[in-house]
Amino acid sequence: MALYCFFLFREGEIIGQTDCQCADDAAAIEIAHALAAHHAIEIYSKNRLVTRIEHAPEPALRDRQAS
Image (cartoon, rainbow, N blue to C red; front, side, top):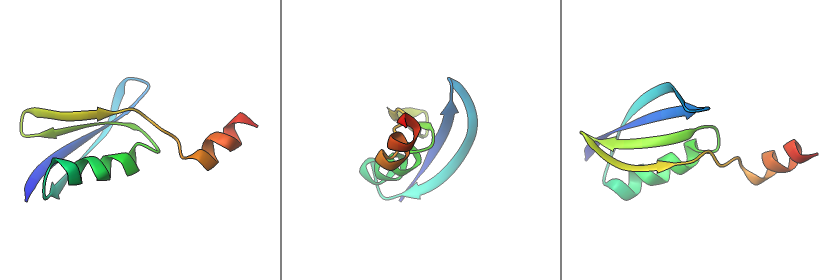
């Protein structure tokens, strides 16, 4: 298990941060995809940027917003 740091973004600004113990990068990315329904996410393992996932509202929410 390794410690991963998740930074949450809204409109380009950091609005929060949380740490999570994950088995590997893939597990951290899976968690980040769930969080990306609400915010853009950057994942770090120590000083290494693992990935950035852009905000992706769930389909039901996108459909409601389009109406």
